[in-house]
Each structure stands twice: as structure tokens, then as C-alpha cells.
Length: 451
Image (cartoon, rainbow, N blue to C red; front, side):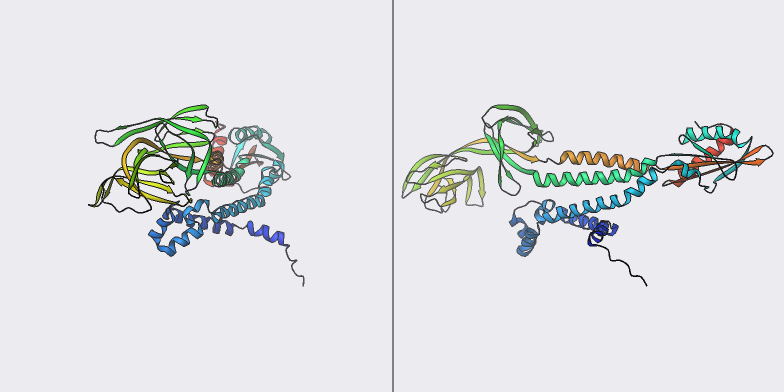
């Protein structure tokens, strides 16, 4: 009794990835995790998840990468496994498909499929062959003919053989879309930036809170907003200028909602607006003495008595219950030893507790309009567009075309007549093929070849 020869490891791995069951399992896993990505808010601060799901739940979400699921390594691994599965499944079945497409028509001529329509017409098989060939040519394609051993003639025509490749075009489109998604996930980024009117920036804050240098600068030349009669904004726009590293003006653009601008592959979208503090004049109170200083954003200013400070954030009106209603600001302070902390400043005379080695009192606040922009760079987007286009073409081939084969067998029927037998086969839409055969039979009997 012979024993089956054990399959080498490479063959087992190939068969594993060629499994349709694996395809189903991976698609199910991607579907379930995508539901999680929809339910769980993405790219929020860790504290937000702890507030929603508790401390333990928040830690689990952070550990598994569910806060940024579509960029998580395990999600990208699922996509990669599905891509490998799709490639191997296609390679397994492609040779048989190509064999069918390239099959010599003379081999089909030797077949004797079961007739779906049969009737007799006057004349010999040779006299009927011209009409049969014309019918096939006008409805299917050029006909091949051969004499049958049993006597008579057989004619064969086919069309749509290449439609069998439609499913492989769909597979290729999915792979291209996967590639685009991975390229965008690995090499792309998204973030935000607020720019004061008249100011410029050369970096943004990513969704994960980290800064990213752009390699160029963006200047907000003008910001404008218009309102409906009810007070709702009807349009807000930003007139911006893109500058090279050396300060040269490269390009001007106008940003509106749903009308972004693109520079060096980075897209800028108008997303928000508001008022921001351009400068803040404060009285620095230390050891009973007060001295006035003007603070700026993103610029450390030396303070009397030592240390430095800069403006972090300011608002013209802050409501804190019944205790205080007025301007407030957050100020970054660095002592002479280099230690940093953030302090809150209120208007002079406000009965608010002061914390820290010194006190800041707001004397004047200069506000300026700012424009909030969403920033996105996705180098894989063109792969996705190409993949979607191929997918549409693949579906058109797959669902709206078929590989049809039609035979007409002509044999002597006696008394100067010829028996016609019309048969066919197809890989899909059997009902359509049946209608075609019925039409061919009707036209042959009527002596009116197809249109």
C-alpha cells in the first residue's frame, strides 16, 4: 500500500495562502475591525478615551492602536495578508483561464454539443454553409468550419473570451487600492494649523500632537468672513501665499470651504476661524514690584528680575462662574534655572488666586483674526484613483460581458434538405445565450440573417 508523499513546506504555505477560506476570514476580520474604527473616535487625546471607556478601557485602546486603527501595524498586516492571498489565488487560477482563452477553435469544432434548436432547410449542407457562416459572423464573430466524420459540416464561432479576465482586473484594482492605502498610511500625514492674519507658519501640528516642519512657509495675507441675515457664516476664505525656504513668494491661492489649495503635494483645507491674541501686554508682579512687558506667541521674552515668558493662548472673554468674567491668558514661564511651567493671567484687580513664583496681570490685549486650516498629504491617493478606475472596468467586463460559443452543425436530412442543429455554451448569463440561439434559429428559418 503506497503512502502519500509529504508536501514540502513551501507547498503547504502556498496552499494556505491560496485558500478561499483564508480570504473569507481576512475579509471578515477587516469588516469587524472597520466597525470598531467607526464606533471608536479616532485620533483623540488619550484622556478622551479614558473618560469614555474608563482608565482600563482607555489603556487597552491605546495599546491596541484602536485610537488610530487605520494606521495601526496590525491593520496594515491584515491588508498585506489579504493582498498576498489575492495574488496567490489569482496565480493559481490564471493558467487555466489563459488556457481556455487561447484554446484552438479547431478543438471546439470536434465537439458535438447537445442541440438546443434543430430544424431542416432546403439544400445541401455545402449550400447552407454560407448562410450559417454569415449568421455566426454577424451575431458572434468569424466562423471556423470543418467537415464531420459522420458527414456534413460543423461551424463554430465565439466572442468575449477575454471577458474571463475581468475578475483578474478587479483583483488587480484591489491590490492597487491596497498599495495606495499603505503608501498613504506610511508616507502621508494629516494635521492642522492656525495662522494669524498677516502671520506665517512653517510647521503644523499632526493629529498625534507632534509638530512637523513643512519645508516651506505659508503666509495668511487676508482673512474674510461673510454672514447670513441670521448670523450664521455664509462663507469664510483665506488669501494665502506659499513661500520658499529663502522667503521667495512661489504661489498665491484662495482657500474656501470645500475648495482647498495644493502645494508640493500637501493639501490645505479651510476648516475654522476665530480671534487670537497677536500680543499681550502684562504687568509682571514680583516681590511687590510691577513692571510692564509685551509678550508674543512663539517668542520668549526676558522678564525683569530674571526668567523668560511667552504667550501660549489668550481669550477676550472667559466666564468662570460668578467669580470672574473677563480676559484671560495662558503664559509659559521659564525660570533662570531652566524650569518651565504654565501660568494663568487675568485682568488687574480680578479676585482670582495666583499660583507660581510671580503674577501676571493683563493690561492690554491685541486681537487678530486667525484662520484654521486642515493639512493633508497623501502620496497614495493617485494609486487609489487608478485602482477605482480599474475596478469599474473589471466589473463591467465581469458582469456585462460573457464568453459565448455557438456551434451550427449541418447534416443531410434527405429529400434535398439539410438538418440544422444549433448549440452553445457560456460561462455566464445562460438565459442570454438561449435567446441568442433562438434568434439565430428564427433568422435562419426565415432566411433573414441577423442584423
